[in-house]
Length: 110
Length: 113
Image (cartoon, rainbow over all chains, first blue to last red):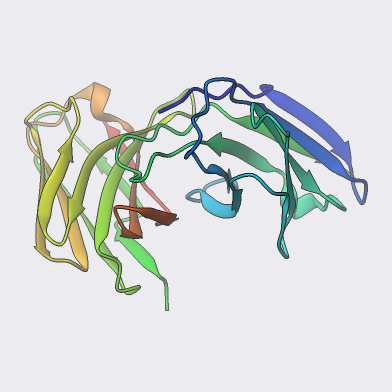
């Protein structure tokens, strides 16, 4: 799988937007960009994924650079419940050998 | 109903013992996985099964043996437990091998003393 690079940690104030970056300069043309998050003492949960166009869902937005070498997960209004480790991964057509980690640990300050 | 459920949630056992962790998914997914999360927060795949067939077996000691009685279940048996086996183990499933998103269980924290 192509390698991804994320900051180890970020902080945000509650109710402010958060932009979580991910670099994936070796991405191939068919790699989807997936984001997961892991809340404390839970398994990772799916957040969003995209290929080329920006994507929105009820949890977040995903902004993908035109050259696809980077992407940004956007949480529009951070809540305390959004404090988690966020993983950016680029699975191939199967998830078989995906490694999650280390991701970005997001802290939300009340 | 929990989509991917694994039991037990916590497991404390002595070195040398044999233990099992069970996993069941009610999503109708074809592919199931076992992941190990180490202290550095990496989740690394151990095994992957597609329709009861082993398709991925990463570099894992042969003391670890997965068993899939049907496509909704993937259990993990560990023989002769060692201190280094202490970790959190996650079961997951996905619709098929073509991707579409993982659904993870809540994890089993194994502590070997």
